[in-house]
Image 1 (cartoon, each protein chain N blue to C red):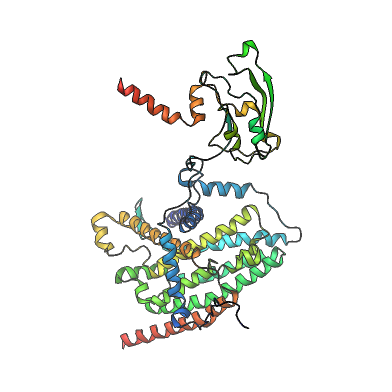
Image 2: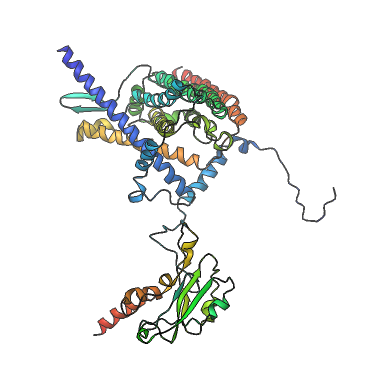
Length: 191
Length: 351
């Protein structure tokens, strides 16, 4: 048959020569290769103890931000929900009452804020759309679960810990705990 | 007086049997672990490292799992033979240990204890007899399962073991012509006295023996009886729980015993290389040198076990016709030639 391209390679099938038929030298060669692999660096990491570092632009689970006084930033404007290409975000707005000023930064807040983590595609458009600095994607991912309902994350799951009452957790959620500790140590050393 | 000596001898031998069997089981337990670790390391993985430090408790976890699993005896199987199979495999694997000299003499409580369960003058023949019995474990297990895959695997295993036994025996005949004795103890003592291990005198014989040992223990590249991708699981497919465990365990014990045998016959047994044991015993005392010798034998066994694993994770399985071709058309003629050449050389040296 006429070959269609000039890339055809004709394979020669020579009968095995004596050394190849002996087979043992080739076994020795193979064993040398496997022995060499014993000293190779292993790419595996021991997962729960060691974790692979995330890239700085990694987009994981969302977090609802608070200001330094512990008030929620979100005003339930709905821009994130509009920006969301997967339609994963639902929210309900409510008006802040007089005695709730320490809880919410502005007069309007999200009474209900839900993200369906099974719908979410972690594109980060909500983060970009937010005018109030209220939603961020973190460096964690949704843990496995048995029910679909459990993947609808409500406000208790999403809110960042209060910086007033739980400063350590707040910094940890921001990924700045280590940095903070180093700063504190440096400040102590300066004194 | 006579009876008292007999009881002491009985206790001594009984203790030795218990120690050897427990040691064999313990080493086999950790050989399964070592196998997985070596496989991991050769394949650039880490191997088991979750249970205990470095995964050292893994064999215990495996054992507990094996025991806790449900025991299933298939309805259509031959129950009695089905239970007999794994037992026979295990017993024959253990029986080889009787004639292997695990060390020189120990002096304890004013008695000289030989670290060998039975120094019989037909030691090597005994080993052959017991090893051929090993076929029954596979054959009965595969037959009693009443499963076609198991049966094919059993027939394969039986024919493979029988074929390779021939070459194994012929390769040993050349060795026995040199030593002139069938007692394993004598063979070791000769090697110690000469200072030259039999592997130097019989390199081809050792090679044939090694290949046959791989075939006899059903290890890769000759693991056709349990070829997973052809026969699902081989002769122990219908087995579950500890009966399966016995089959798997018997394979490892067979490995240990054939390693011990190769170390004894070809690598000087408990001989410490480049050292004169007699002068050393005068300097340090017999017991220390004996213990060192036993440790040396263990080191040799471990080295052979590593070789078994190393080969397993390197070489793919033979095709069945290639296996038979190698056994009957290559190894047997080679062993015969080796035998003839050895005989001729011995005659020529003796004039």
